Length: 329
Image 1: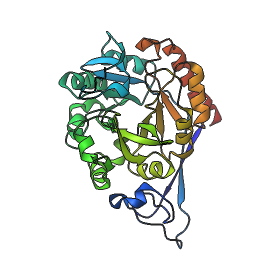
Image 2: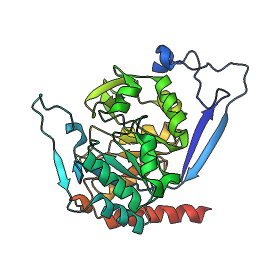
Image 3: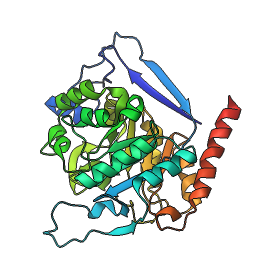
């Protein structure tokens, strides 16, 4: 069971911070927010309770369903690095979507690792195959998000746009200026798609002992640290977070338990963690470290993506969580 606690004040749902709290958002002029007056009443806590879920994924690269070590993605290979592909499927994105639908899995992520025409077509095929059950991201911008909704009429009412901070696309240029988050542009995007349809990808890597959100296909550190204050602040603009532990993602080295604990302690909205899951014990560790408040997605480790972890076992675990939650109600 997970309980989300969020503090919102009378400034339109945007969290406020005490003046004496040291935070990037207090230092950066574009990220300044109204300060909480000492005379105001204590903020109302909004709680959302649900069961831990397994969120399936469909990663698409050049139109094919693949599992790629995300940290090896880049637009240029001038540094001599090589793209590492763990798995390439002979099944289409649409086939995976139909399988997830049959297995009763919702909230899965369809990620275009490059918004080329073949990947766009594959992503739309998956969305049409499972209306309302999937979310899409990668190459989504303020300019094209509404056109995606228009081209996905079968799932219009449940379409969710994932804004990927990890891809080099128009939105990356739109939201970040020289590695800094531009609050006004983020607000503009919320006006276009709505907070309830926006998922922010806050994938991060460790730098100097702290987690920093990474951009430019996980190659560049932004100046935004992932901590209690940033999670609370950004939670005012999105319906969910998706967080890849980039240091372990795709490497099947085990989870980043410290990151999972941070998300479980401080995320004010539903959050899904990805990275390093290898065995079922890792899934249970996410549940425990995240205090039952962090969902999980698994990629390369699953046997449907060439790994050794049985997909059917993870699906069974997922349904067991749902049944346990229902029994408590």
